[in-house]
Amino acid sequence: MHIEVFGDQKRASQRIVDLLTRQLRAYPYSVLGLATGATVIPIYREIIERIHRAQLNLSQVRTFNLDEYMGLQDHDPHSFHAFMQHHLFYPAHLTPDQTFFPFPEFSQDPSGYDRLIEQHGGIDWQLLGIGHNGHIGFNEPGTSFDSETHVVKLTENTRKANRHWFDGDWHHVPEQALTMGLKTIMRSRTIVLAAFGASKSAVLAKAVYGPVCPELPASILQHHPRVYIICDQEAGRLLRPSSSSNSPGFPSQFDV
Image (cartoon, rainbow, N blue to C red):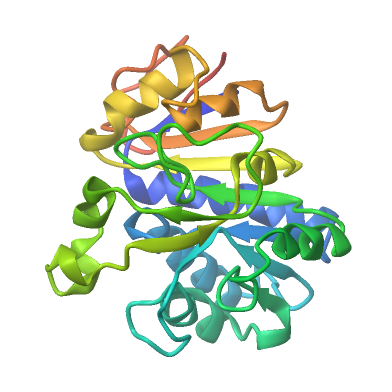
């Protein structure tokens, strides 16, 4: 794992988009794995700013989202389709034939999503967040490391954590979702995990330094050959850098 801890969320987001820019300059036709949630909003904002400055071009990419709630229509404002359309696809001028989601097309055949990814050559660059219980995608604690795209029953804690996207009522959060599995994610050539805020510090440290076990799904990333952990100082406060700086925006970089 290559870990970089930045003074603030903005600089960390800029660094993540630096990595994406480097990827697309080398491989303009890259297949991107994308995530949703509060963590990625500043990252997508930075992507749009660079597109407007003609510093980044997504016109030739294909994207595969990690997951989607089951039972929500594409146009439902609570769906991940709608989230991506608002925060990235529409302002970046991505067309529907460039973007893929596991639901609804693959609700009856989840493994078809894995086959579609492979038909496009596999994921070159996968963006992840990390949940408070260590989930990545919607792979909850206990998920098999051999899992591919599958239907998952969301835990009450995960539904409560996502309630702010549903007008504050966790009972409105769907009970099921379709998600890439851990094996699917681990096939990605490069993985970039973003973590912001003090609430992510403990689980991030466990994912980096703790035992690799299904009870902490993100710990599987320790076995991936090319993972970047990019976080702000609050999320990275329990990590052990080889050097540090109190200057905002100046990263501590280290490998584990």
